[in-house]
Image (cartoon, rainbow, N blue to C red):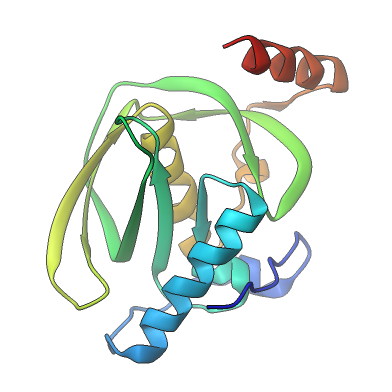
Length: 167
């Protein structure tokens, strides 16, 4: 495994639509493993292949809703069902130090393939649903700052950090 460089806003690759994954091989497995290491080092919640310069429909998300955090891998994902609405703060590893208020579904069900090509469905609520949508946007060349209702001020960010420390 290796840590890959996370592309930052302004890199043209982040604005391109990713292509379907057709080969479920060692190269894909290495990409997913590298993404896992990169995400771990960056302390993020999710990472899409385009963020590390690979224009393929793949992303990973850490689901924190259970007893233990669970890393989930999604290849060729598509949303099959959504429910409700949540409005909340969102950031991105490709847009460091920028946070905005984004409206997302409260619950999201995704159909995707695993690293071996087998189909599965996964469901997420709250932060996990937000991460699913955020990473899917990356596969379409969309960054969260394009859909944010507004951006958080430094004071709001500090207040948010303080409240997270107290949780």
